[in-house]
Length: 227
Ligand SMILES: [Zn+2]
Image 1 (cartoon, protein in one colour):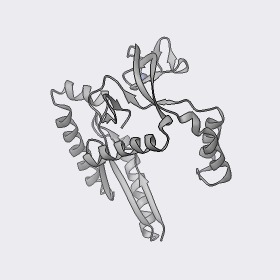
Image 2 (cartoon, helix red, strand yellow):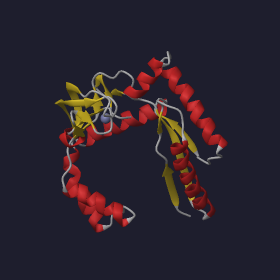
Image 3 (cartoon, protein in one colour):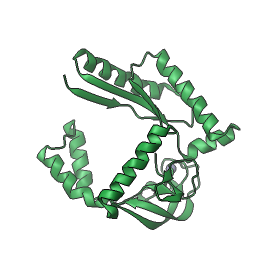
Image 4 (spheres, helix red, strand yellow):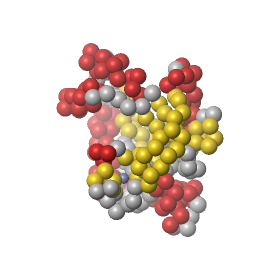
């Protein structure tokens, strides 16, 4: 018997569930059921992604507090998955205390093992509130985000905490090439190797102006991005 962990994407609480969500959940449910029949020790997770600017806006537009709004959405999504008889073993919501504790513990562990991996920096660029991230020139067409052509990009300068992802390029490449880390199928493995060969940028892991989120350990003015 081998252990098998499977998670679906956890869904954004900013709109109703639709067929696209159902397609993914039913597919994952088939894999989980097949693995259980084979005798594997399966842990199948589903849940809700509840912290984001988009969720805050949806709550405001509907005249609810963010917590009331995500509670209502979680109930609606869970009811759908019950009706489709999904066999998930756990249901996680990112506003739950156990999730908040896990995120905080992870960041504190990174800081204690490699203090240099988390650092504060200024970020200046064009921010898309649809994507909730700064856009790079290749992602901008005619002055708008490729994915959100009807939204205005906002010139923004803010202080963020960054994770030194660039440091992990070589160790990751080495582990994937040696087979110690397996990425399947081969087409995805090659995609990952190409991405690593192009180099990795340090990534912003906090937001300054977003109160609806998990406080960044040691800096209450910032919330953790994107959990
Ligand atoms: Zn966008």
